[in-house]
Length: 165
Image (tube, rainbow, N blue to C red; front, side):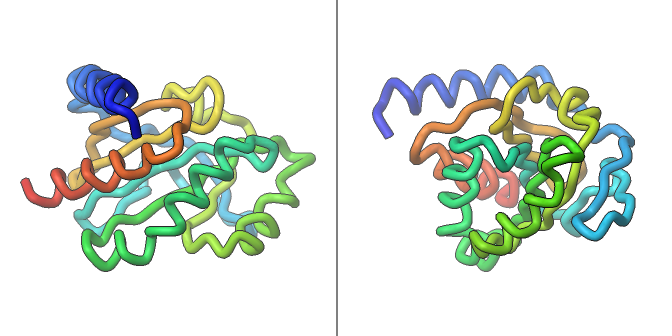
């Protein structure tokens, strides 16, 4: 990753961290891929940090980002215990594509559906991909949109910082 992009990501992260330092997850109804309701406020990782990735089946940068994270995910989990929730914002007519795509990619993430996009909007996601990092206490520590190749390294560095605290 070039220095300009890394610097920009750091500035954005610091700004978002200060804005969202005490924000908690709102209570919005999502569904898992079998249709079971899941309340967004219950998303957690047993006191460890977790990452929420808002994505869509039609979003090529989303797929690239989730694939890039997946390439390192087993190592990340072993090292830090981090968990990723991949939350699809596909509309109802495309929801049937979500699980087959995730399965075909071999993603080990917990896949949830936000067909109304209510959770995504509440979390500041205008367009995917959008990442939210939550610390072990359920506080949002970073939120940003877009994907640049290599930016997944920033995610794991942030998670490492959070578990070191």
